[in-house]
Length: 264
Image (cartoon, rainbow, N blue to C red; front, top):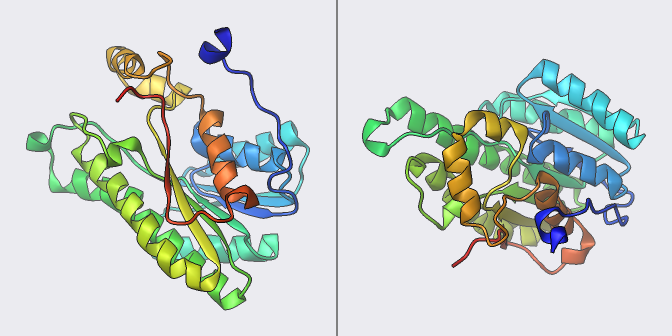
């Protein structure tokens, strides 16, 4: 059963052949970069990635080109909490990609704090980036896709915390529950203009940044709740994003897919 504990990386199968992709918060080693790399491996013709950290973003652009061989890779910094930057990013990607076929909304922010100790500023910051940022990207992308008249696909990154409870995560859980509701409601409107909108809801995706920021005891506790005794690899989450971004999910819209191995 080693394949359960140590899954083999799944190669691309051409799911996004000929498509163009925009991914937010895609610098570094998390789900965003994994999704960007997977999109290229699945055959996308061109991609734009964004992040709030300029240096890390450029390094990720270079890494993506080096590891995949695709040269049609561009990066642009964006803080999804700022409307002007959201619009500038989408406009930049529309021009570079000759139209965005797929948007992957990965940007989010989390901290750990008990509600009784939380200041308004911390609550609102997490909500503004994680929920409002996803709304801003989705809203403007829908406006652009509607004007273009060719439709498209949006994949949001939610979390099982939108359904479940965890100490010190009231703000993040509320934001992710909001992302789920946003996805469902926007999808009903998107259906009228040919835009499919779905979301993934990961339980626990383990990567180096998480290991640095989260206490080891907490990670062990969370991994212990997973049926396989481990968190997901970031590329395992990205695989499900690719399914939702592809024509394999052509009938699906407004759905939230849990990427989880949690016991009931």
